[in-house]
Image (cartoon, rainbow, N blue to C red):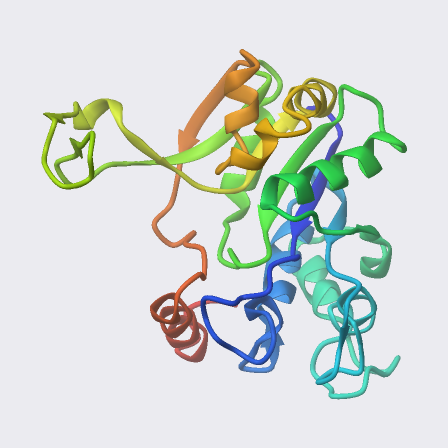
Amino acid sequence: MPKCISLLLSGGTGSRLGADIPKQYIRTSGRMMITRSICALFKCVQIKSVRIVADTAWHDQIRKDWQEFCREYTVCEGADTPAPEHECEQINCALKAKRPGNAKEFITGFSVPGSTRQLSILNGLEDIAKEYDKDTVVLIHDAARPFVSASMLENCIKACDTHDGAMPVLPMKDTVYYSEDGASVTKLLEREKIFAGQAPEAFILGKYLDANRALLPDRILTIKGSTEPAVMAGMDIAMIPGEESNFKVTTPADLKRYEEIVNAGIAE
């Protein structure tokens, strides 16, 4: 299995939720959403390290920028003021997974966000490419998808043994229609051939970086999903089974669902 580096996207502002801080830093049952995502990545032994895309803008509520906040708080949850005697959440995960190593060393760096999600990804890719060879697998995940399973992570990475990339997908449950004008039905689509994509998505670093660079400066601004540049470049992308529990927290309803799951003790 190829070496894998994770790129965790945490540059969003959470504006659709209307919260005081970005959703990924909201604390529920003693832990932030981003910490749960980091723990999930840390438990996958195939992932060697994680680079976080986070903003450097000053935030009055925390009195520091988000990169500094991540350095201090995601590796030592459970206290308002980090202290060495508090056991880091990633270490807890490491013990459960019997993974050796220092969890603090798992977070190897930060990248600045771009004006769009895909430009944030490109910034991260460029930074990773300075340290790793082109055959490295880069696994892109959202800090706001905290319930990703170990099996999904492993399956994404393993698929890159024989493909240029991989993404989890869900089959469509509802009948799907196509509309030219958004007001009336143009035609019925074949539901069996339509899938909803999820994250994480894994790609061979060199090929995926080239695919993104080829879209500069303007076409990259129209990209909606991480796999889109890969498909446009003709990369071979495998589909693996997605999971309903691997939802992204985007709306207030999503946040409520997330908090109910955590508070009920269903998730770790």
